[in-house]
Amino acid sequence: MAAVTALRPAYRGRAPRMDLSAKSMLQRDLDLAVAARARKERACLQEGAGLLALQQKGGREGSGSGFGGAGRAPAAATGKSKASKSKTSKKGSKSAGAAKALKQHGSVLAKELINEGVVRIDGAITAATADALREFVDAERIRSTAEVSSGQRQFSDRFADLVLVENRCDLLLPLDGPPVDALQELLGERSVLGPLLEEVVGRNAVFQEIACLISEPGAEQQPLHPDTPFTPTPSLYAAFLALQDVTVEMGPTLYLPGTHTKEQHTIFYGGNLAVGRDPVGTRTNPVNEEYLASRPVKFGLLKKGDVALYNQQVLHCGSANESEDRVRRQFYISVRNPAVKGINARASIRPAYLNQLSLGEVRDELKALAVGNPAHTFAKLYEADVFLEGTAESAARMAEQAPVM
Image 1 (tube, helix red, strand yellow):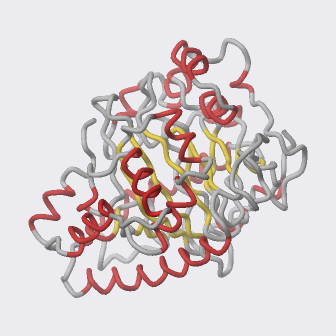
Image 2: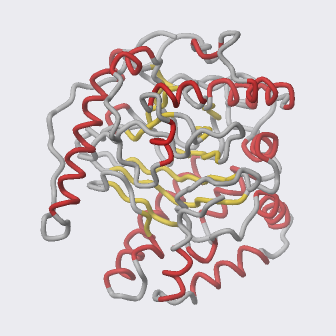
């Protein structure tokens, strides 16, 4: 893996801007502490390289990428298109659970996902579909903001909370129009991602998130974190889809491949895995500078329509958007394994959809839509969302936003 110096722009020293009229002093202090930790972690990390796709036959016709992509390298990255093996892929580094999973799964992408915790798929949706969804997201953000401002909806009906929310937005999307068109290409019959998710987590996996993360210029780098604590069987997988080309200045997602194991979590949390189960997400353990400096870094420098799929136990973060005027929009979905119990997981999904959709049901619905049949499941949930009161009922549903699985 060739190091790419350009993938680590110099920190400009911007402090997070705080609106004290809208935030408590306590929240301000917490944000400042979180931002300071992220900057310290950032200073420890290696120079990064772009996350590349593996080569495998198949995939969307006309995508130019094949199954898993042809390894289309980001502009700043060099080297062969086939993804390099990191240190964590060496014999003896995998847990017994991972070794068993490797025997169970046959595809190249599934094995890479088990080994590294993150894979890239090029051309998951077409550029035209990505453009339509990006325009829809911008309009939906305006519409949702107006609904919340007018009192028609609660904030949690249309948006999810984020760490270092300044200049970031997590917009919950409806099952209608361009989001469904994107899901058709992303998970439908001719997709790469749909069969891959079925292979690693099964058709009974439940949709946990259907949303778009928006990162604007000035967004700070987040602290490194896993979305879920370590469990022998991964509890969630998330797919991040680029709605425009992503450059390093725009704050791509930063991944530390191979950090989804019990051993890696134990080191990251200073020997105390219980810290990883903290639902608030605050970190009391010191930053392990030597450990962070030892880990290879991959950036999600995706082209429009490309996707990164990751085991949500992998250490990652949103990096800083240090561009002058470029907004990064990232459509994403996640699915959770209902067989894994006792995990708190945030749900960036509209309240009416929470715990209502399995991967198999969604893929079956998309198959029916592809041949002209009506969208019974999506239509029912869309109607439930439209008529969901923005008061007690939606608040009660989103009280389950971190359901114990």
